[in-house]
Length: 68
Image (cartoon, helix red, strand yellow):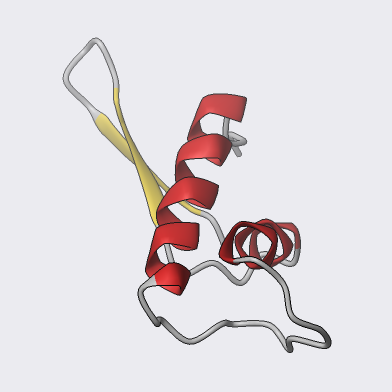
């Protein structure tokens, strides 16, 4: 199975942090007050981010990678 690249990881954390900043519910238990960025990183580490990555390959195929 393919893993996500560092660029995809950064994009996922940024997108999720933006969602959290606009009031989306966190998918992990917030034990202390954390920034949306920190919460997004924790969600990605625990693999509970409700996002996926779609890679468009040069041959025209698309691969969908579920983050969780």
